[in-house]
Structures are given as C-alpha cells and as structure tokens.
Length: 266
Image (tube, rainbow, N blue to C red; front, side, top):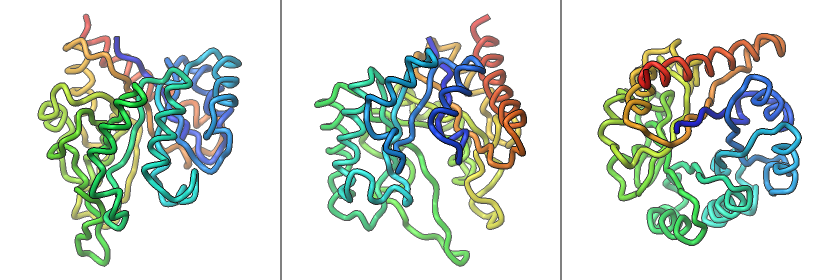
C-alpha cells in the first residue's frame, strides 16, 4: 500500500522535533529525514525517540548530499551514503534517497553506480537515485552532475522522482514515471512551474497542484497499479508567516495525495 510521508525539510528552518510533531498532527504516515548539520539527524537514538514520542515512523533517509552538508560525516561521499544506509537499517526505514554526484567528486562519480548497488546489497536498504536538473551559469548550461542529472539513462536499480526537479529539467513527470516503470521506487511530492529556459525560477518545490507538473496523474497511475512505495512531501513552506499557514500548506499537500490515490483505487 502506498504511504504518504513528509520530509523534515518541509518545516525548514525549524528543527527536527517540529517536523515530527507536524507530520503526526496532520496524519502523515511517516517522515523522511534529511541528514543535515543537526546532530539529531545523524544517529538513530534521537530519531527513534522522536518517532516513539509522536507515534510516527521514519520511512526514509535522505543522504547528506547538499553543499551545506559538505562536512557532515567527513568529506567522503561514499562514507556519507554508507552511513545513511546504516542509519536507515537501524531505524527500520526501507529507503535512502541520494543525488547523483557532482562532477568534481571525481573518484566517487566514476564508481557511483557500483557504490549505490553495493551499499544497497550490504545494508538491505533500497538506495534510490533522485532525478536532478541541468545547471545554468550566466545563461549557459553547466555539466554539474556525473554521470548526469537524469537517472533514467543510468544503470541503477531504483529511482526517486522529484516533480520540482522534473519541471526545471523540462521533463514531464508522468512520462518519466512511465519510462522508469518498476525502477520507480520513491516519489518526492511537490510541484514546479519553472523551465530550463526560465532564469527567474530556481528549485521551487511548490505545493502539488500549484505548478505545471502532472502530479495527480502520476499518483493515480501508481495507486491504480498497486505500487507500494512511499510518496514523501517535499514542499517549500518558508514563506509561511506562522505555524497556522505552514500547517495549511502541508495539510493541502496531504489532502492532494490522499484524494488522487483514493480516486484511482475506487
């Protein structure tokens, strides 16, 4: 059965406990923890304590792949991925989300696909490579990722689909989901309206239904096929003026997911 979770980034810049509290209050099925510079995201004990306190499980771990987490768990990206998988296994989470390497991470980038597969086999946790997007600097395309930003053409077993990233790539999320087939393991629930040619827009992570991606269609397709992965909200709520507004955005996101997954099942 499809699970609807909430990423801890949905309450950024607020802390980890607020993410668990919010997800439990709104009725999400679990949380995805983004490993960050917050020590509590890096070890099982505090995460398990929060899960027990709020009665909500950790569904997935997002490996520390952002530039802001460059020094989390050292500087070796392979170690970061392996520790993310170990953390997920200890918490009973079945998935680790990882971005493709930056091209300047030369050794890691060259062995990335083998490292992903070996980490999954050794840990017993699925490692799902997330689709990213082309970078533009001064209006010119830049090859930021290696072997690339789109895992569709990569020899990886499982993939995470992010709709905001798809929008920035000029990709139709439904077509990508169809092309991935059984490799689609995990979904970041959000939306986007930007295109590769729109220099004004960066990674939006809109509430689903507020952008141009076929999010509803993908949810209906997955629910209708009996897909059993997790759909995890990853929306930007930083413009919310208070907790009430933040809760409203995240409630709307959950209701969107429930509505379209139920529509397919009925």
